[in-house]
Image 1 (cartoon, rainbow, N blue to C red):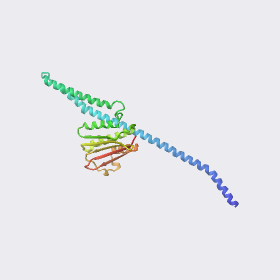
Image 2: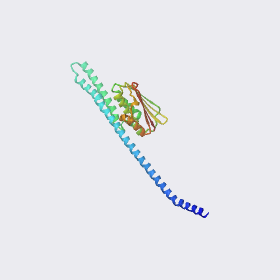
Image 3: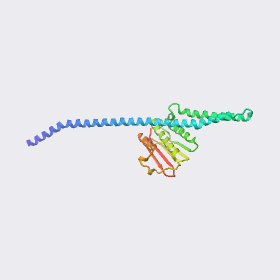
Length: 260
C-alpha cells in the first residue's frame, strides 16, 4: 500500500514538473508556426505585388505597341495620303482642285479622330481607368483594324458597383495574351468574346474558328510562356483558366475569377 502511494506521489511529481515543459514546448512550436505562417503570408503578398506590377508593365507595353503600330500603319498612312492629295492639286482645274481639297479635309478629319482615340489611352489611369468592359472594347478595336478578323463582343450581366482593379488587370492581361495567340497562330477569321458576371464570379470566354491544336499532346514543360502565365495569373487571384482546343475546330479559353 505504502509502495503504491509512493508511486502515485512520484508520478504526480513528474507530471507536475513535466507539465510546464510541455506547455513551454507547445508555446514555442505554436509561435514558430505562427511566425512561419506570417512569413508565408508576407512572401505571398510580395509575390502578388510583384506579379501585379509585372502585369501592369506588360499591359502598358502592349498598349504602347498598339499605339505605335496605329501611328505608323493608320494615322501615318492617313496623313501621307493627305499630303499626296494636297501636293497633287492643280489650280488650273478648279473643279478637280476642289474635290482634292475636300478629300484632304476628310483625311485630316479622320486623322484627328484617330488621334483623339489614342489620346484617351494616355490620359488618367490609362486603359483600365475606363472600366474592364470598355478596355476590352479598345483592345477589340485594335484587332479589327487589321481587317483580318471579325470580332463579336457581348457583355452579359450587371457588373458589380465596386470593381477590383487588380483583378481587372489580370483578366485584361489574359485577354491580351489570348488575342496575341489567336493573331499569331490560329489563322482564324472570327473571334467571339463574352464577359459575364454571375454568382460572385467574373467569367471571360474567348473562342475562335481557327486551326486549333491538340491540347492533350502538350506537357506542362512544353506549354508556352503565355499559357503558363495565364494559369499562374488566374491562380494568384483565386481563379482558373480552362482551355479547350481541337485540331481544325478552333480554340476556346474561359477565365473564371472570384469577384470582386
